[in-house]
Image 1 (cartoon, one colour):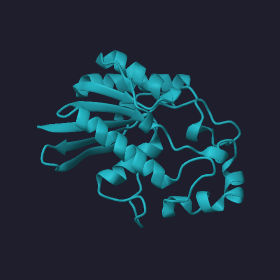
Image 2 (cartoon, rainbow, N blue to C red):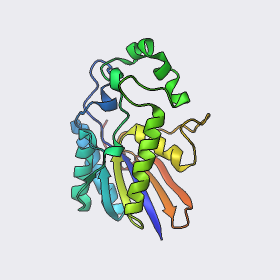
Image 3 (tube, rainbow, N blue to C red):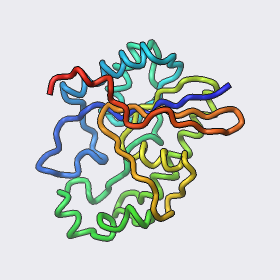
Image 4 (cartoon, rainbow, N blue to C red):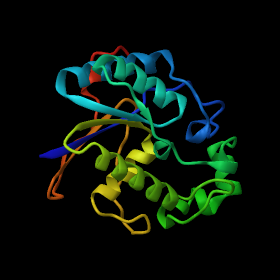
Length: 210
């Protein structure tokens, strides 16, 4: 027997305001395009998987995606707070350029060091520990199921690293692309053997107009 984890990045959200770091922590909704992407995701899950549980980040863009998916696979999503995006704290209303000037240790070096704390927020190491703990708990609760997890780019990337055995403070960690409305499909066998089926798969969006 095995447990399959289908990590899903939420659909496109409303646009960032003047290049602010709005998407990191602020609670924004799906755009009309994001809703369409979520419906296509639902169709993909309905036709290609046997989803038995759906978990979602508490942030609106993820919950809206999960609810649209849940309606199609007939599973009511469960909100899991550990799946939320990185808490950007004092950075949340700054542009990227402003943040690089005011907090260079976080923006320029925080990702590599892992422990660089965002004032009033989290470090990348905090995110790594939080998401790994949350997903391992979900897996333990839903053994031998196909589990859909709707979250954000940051949590998906950090869990992929954890899944492959990398700690948050390790150098030369692998990088992963995580597009909106993408699917990342993993499997854990009962003996602990791990399989990666696909990463950043967005084939279900192929027919969407630009």
